Length: 106
Image (cartoon, rainbow, N blue to C red; front, side, top):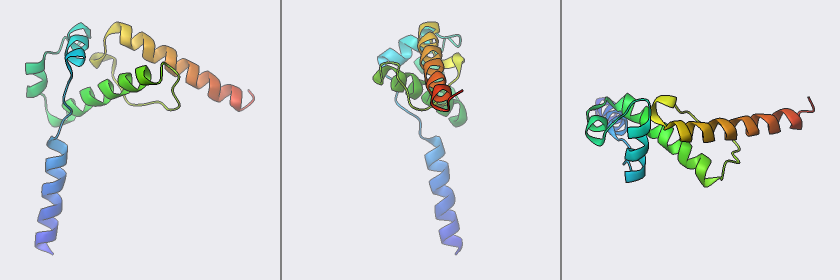
């Protein structure tokens, strides 16, 4: 039982420590974001902060892949996206919410 518990705890810690790999485009966007984050600064962030950056970068990638027509809202922070990317996220989110409201007949 003790080995199983230790194994589970090690798995949680190793998963939490993993972060995404930022592309050159991500680094450029982060430099233009309110955080002005660099690749070397990203490496020094806590695992939770790295996850927030990765989630934000994944959401703008989703918005762009879907050409702005999204079917779900994702986690992101304006701190980790450029102003231009934030405009695309806001437009896509607003359009998504409008579709939801219209679908409910309001």
